[in-house]
Structures are given as C-alpha cells and as structure tokens.
Image (cartoon, rainbow, N blue to C red; front, side, top):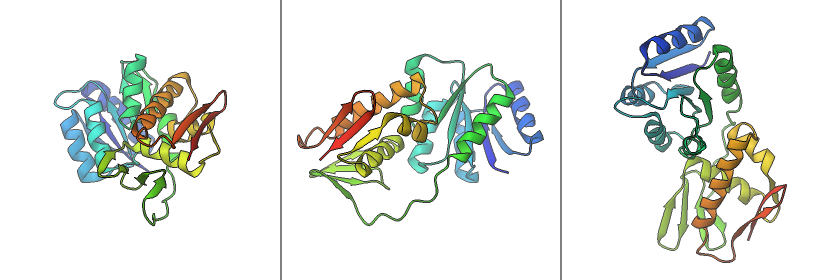
Length: 225
C-alpha cells in the first residue's frame, strides 16, 4: 500500500487519523509540526502528503512550497479549517492538489487520497531541450522560462499548465479538461485558481507581443504563437 506522510499538530486528531488509515492498510508516517514533516519527507519519500495548514514552526503552505522545490509531482492534500477563497487559491498556487475542510469524515479523506494517487502520471519522456515559445525558451523539466538573459522560475502547476498550452498551441485547450487533469475537478474554486494561473503566465510572457494566451469564451484557452 502507498505511504502517507501525515502532518497534524493536534495530537488527538493526528493519532485518530493515523490509526484509521493504518487500519485500512496504509503505511503512515506522522509528524506534529511542519519542520518535522519536512524532515520526514526528505528522509522517507512518501507517496502522498496530508498536511494541516496552521502548524507551529513551519505552516503547511510554507512546507508545501519547500517540498515543491524538491519534488514536483508528489500529491499534497491540505487539511484545514481555513476555507476562504484566497486561502484555497494560495494553497493551489503553492502546489497543493486538494483541500479538505475540517471537520471531515475518514471515508471522504480516504476517497480523496485514493483519487490523488490514481491520478499520478506515468513517467514523462526525457526532454530533448527547451521549447521555443516565440522568443522565450521554456525548460519544462526544470520549470524555467527564459527571455534573453532573464530567467523566470515557474511553480510546478504553472509549468504543467504552460506545457499543456504549448502542446495544444494555436488550438483550444479545454478548460474543463485541464481542471480535471491538474486540479482534480472543475469546481468553482478550482476554476478561480486556474484563472489566476492564466493571468500569471500572461505576465511571464508579456515581453514578446507575438505570444498571446487568449480566452475562448465558454470553452477554454488558446496559446497563439
């Protein structure tokens, strides 16, 4: 069974969740704060991270940001009482894959964990070099976008979204399809998050006026080169 890294600073809740997951066959590594969680991640390489947001020493968002610098693909599921749209969007921007509001049922948590694990992509073929996007050079594996001597570091999700736009260049990338592939579903909050990412990619590509990401109303987006 997959290994779950669980980070939760409420000991009673953490132990209940740990015991429940282990009773259903999962292997669980448990940490009570963000710093300890990050150290366990670096030592044990779990298959999925389930983390509270409000934690001592290192909060869940900051921990996820550091994890994404080292690993672009491991699923991260946030557990939190914070459910404002801005918090949800920030969690996705930092590389989170799902968001479960407290209090939650164990059945729902397990369903979401299994869904995230089932969506893990097959190993991508080795890239032969940077991709040309107008006057930009896009290094997808390294998540870098270069324009002349300037280099922009992209987040994991920014790089994945730009790669899909590039693969469908001059054609429509369907909004619903990309939401389901990169965010897990096409809910309202995920749609808002996708809009934020499109805006950020437009800013990253603004130096070349020949490169545009246009909205195709009601359908999706098109990268025009």
